[in-house]
Length: 100
Image (cartoon, rainbow, N blue to C red):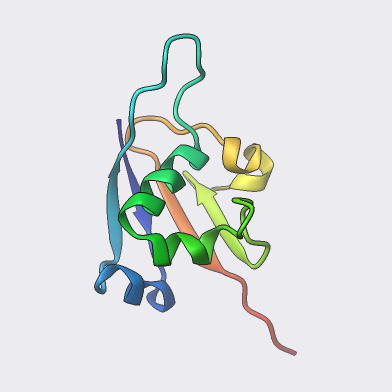
């Protein structure tokens, strides 16, 4: 199954300037649910470990200051890294902006 990861400019340095990554996710084993955001991030970790470290912390949890949207919906509303994906899903990464 293929999904697309859309990257903001600040993270493109970790993927040779690419605006997006096409990720091929493995099919789930028998009895398991379909692919998840966590599975997509595992693929990112294998291909682009420096990028993955900006998305997840040392324990593998999603970083608080990075917002991930799955098909336009904030992933934390969909179960965080357990958010389900479908063929052609778009995952958009939006870093938090601080200021005052």
